[in-house]
Image 1 (cartoon, rainbow, N blue to C red):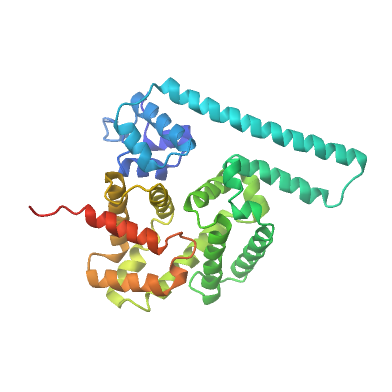
Image 2 (cartoon, rainbow, N blue to C red; image 1 turned 45 degrees about the vertical axis):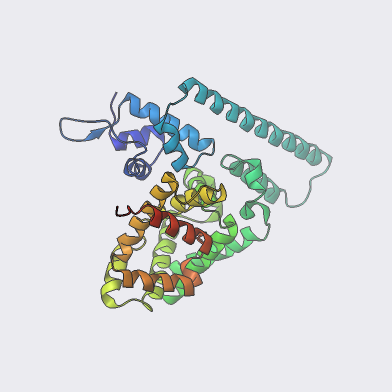
Length: 342
């Protein structure tokens, strides 16, 4: 069986964007073409995709997966064994949740406690989070541990929906301010961890109940995204001339959800002590620079203005988990990747 990218996305549960990203970074490319020129995934490609997704579920960053798959690979059965072990841990988590529910039932039999509906909502949400985060990760996820964050999110969602209901546009100052508050809340809720942000987004997309309870509809989400881009472009306009802004308006925000994955991989490498001259880190830095140049162009003077804007304007970094240490790491890796004359 051979599948187009759309067919593979549908059958695997991944998005076409993810498969295109895997292709772009050399992680998984279709191995054949149809008579009409369509690129097709075959049996070997799908087996490789299984390895990629299994390693991702086991917590390996994409850069490390690429390295792992570039050398001798263990038998697929060994990888499946590791997946089974992870499922066993998940089942143990489910058993612990069952124990909590049995305890809850015994309390209900003894006498109905107040705010039962809220309590059950919380329990349901706990099980939802446990599908996407390990118990250790949940201890460091503020959105899960800080009881004040969910009401704050709810109030912000209500404010955004009210702005939409009264006809606000992403170019309106109040919509832009709400979007900047949203990004600040993203940073607070995820502990400035871009990997957590990506998983929360996946959870929102995969769990209909999550959207229903949060009120974050696809329409509201798009409005916030467009307002955030508009707000940041307004900030860049203080530093760039009209020619530079034309490019920014055309390209800024196009890879909004590619950046967090790249930032997460670089943060992991930095935290693990991987040197900037490591080939995998250099590859990540080159991706960073290519994505940066897409909206910044190639003029060093423009780059300097944009760096100044990022340094002076906290709203440009809010929710992105990019700090000075990470920027220095990227610059060192990008510089060390430039071929030196002999």
